[in-house]
Length: 361
Ligand code: SAM
Ligand code: SF4
Image 1 (cartoon, rainbow, N blue to C red):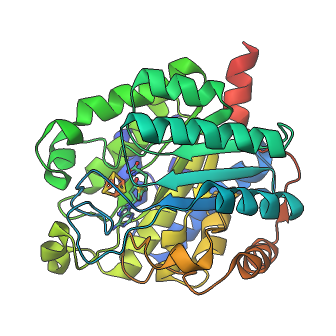
Image 2 (cartoon, rainbow, N blue to C red; image 1 turned 135 degrees about the vertical axis):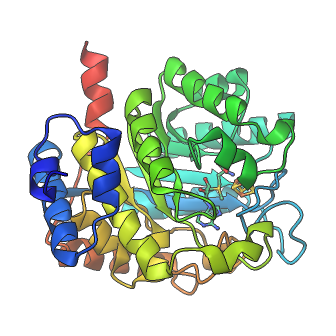
Image 3 (tube, rainbow, N blue to C red; image 1 turned 180 degrees about the vertical axis):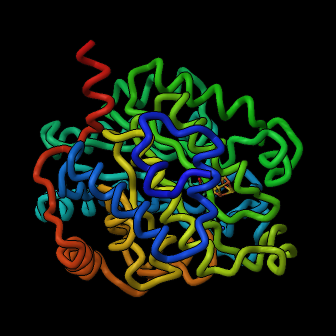
């Protein structure tokens, strides 16, 4: 087997190389990987961090993913839906704090009223921002028609994690029915790309039954799909979910964290000019998790701008951080994160360079 130093310098990484990088045993080896990824990031996307204000629009969800704390059958969650006026306030706040982009995320609803509500909201956002704002949606699986309607109403980016690219594992993580179908999710990603969205995906890392080979395949899946942006992070258990019963079989939380950093780093080496988020789940394990994600090759942060009164009901997993931090504090905190990683906040929209290059051809 090649030493880590030689693997990270290779032009093309094989699945075997990726598994070797994912399973490094020493801190020195991990540092070689992370430093290489950071150097690639500096060379291809610079030491700039793109901020996206995150709005957790609603925790009302029609689905029952086995890992998620806001799944429909969890009756211990108080459901909410942020009214448009409050969302508009958040947008104004984001604008006055030099954000040029927001992410609207929500539980998944697939009906006429929801589609129209989002369309109206997008139109309002375009109005108040004089079309100076980039909006990413993360609202789950929808019909092609709906995706087109939202694109035409001003959404340019869409984030839909594949969760795991392995069909078998995907089936284990979801109820076996039409609402939770791997092929349908994959098709959505293809449709989003075809419509012209900057398309993002991602996976959870350290899931029950997940192998290092699965994770290597996940990274190759993202490369083969030629994705523009990625948000991935550690799986963290939630006691009101079916997967909680497997908690004893999980990797220790610190190992899930390190593995997530290695996933980010390898992805940066594989896909040099895409946008990669340093996710909140990293911070829930390590207070400096998001800085560490940046130093492992990530270039996007998503400070939570959801009004405080709703925050503790968007509990996807245990110990989700930032629940007691209001919007102002979130912004101050995130600036500290960027500074302590020795980077600076980018002033432009932060479109994926990968996407822009593809568009030029
Ligand atoms: N409902 C939409 C969907 O599923 O695509 C968007 C919202 S969903 C809450 C956003 C992401 O949260 C999911 O794609 C999943 O990866 C992540 N998530 C859910 N439960 C999680 C957990 N227990 N640990 C880590 N991430 C989790
Ligand atoms: Fe709903 Fe998304 Fe959670 Fe699945 S991951 S239960 S679709 S909010």
